[in-house]
Length: 112
Length: 143
Image 1 (tube, each protein chain N blue to C red):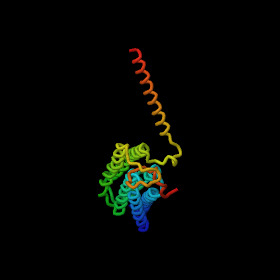
Image 2 (image 1 turned 90 degrees about the horizontal axis):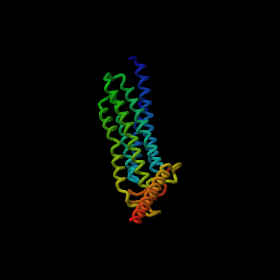
Image 3 (image 1 turned 120 degrees about the horizontal axis):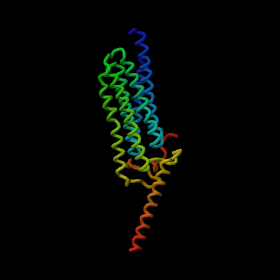
Image 4 (image 1 turned 135 degrees about the vertical axis):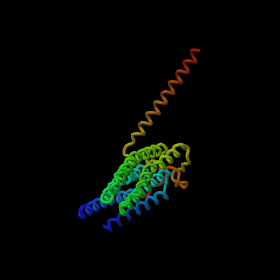
């Protein structure tokens, strides 16, 4: 059973690392907001796994607060983006170095 | 409770937690590998709802032998409920803003129902404006 607990911890750590990578890579601000959401989800999973491992219910209020407040970040970022319709969009074929521009103009990164 | 029963409960709890952790890992991999915002949102929703619910069930099962307080299980149910209520709100708003501000690769979409709706709305608006202009002209002519 110890091996399973180790697998759980390693999987959660890897997931947090990968979503941090997406947080750095961008390319648009909504992708970053999304990766913050996944980070929050993995933090909640990690807290639950810790509580389950120690059989300790002390951390449950933290879980409740995270479940209630976790979605505000991506909602407020989306609202902030929606209020700025005129945004810097780089010309076709160039990469977006500001990290705020449109995904359409960047070449296909990784995956399918 | 007998020892074997507690051990069986522990195994079930660990398997639930393992499934939740693996779903989170899958979401991380999908976030890095998928090409555009909508497909990333698709993969990001897995640990936020199903993964977290599995983990909460595992935690509740694991707490059964040591915990007699009913409120703790109630707290877990509330966590799951709030997560189910709030995650679709965030996803809906993010997807809407992403579409409206052109951060979506349209060639990756299989079907785009929103584009038809937007075109229809714009056509109706233009029609209304033209009607208004015609009425204004008529009013000027009668004067």
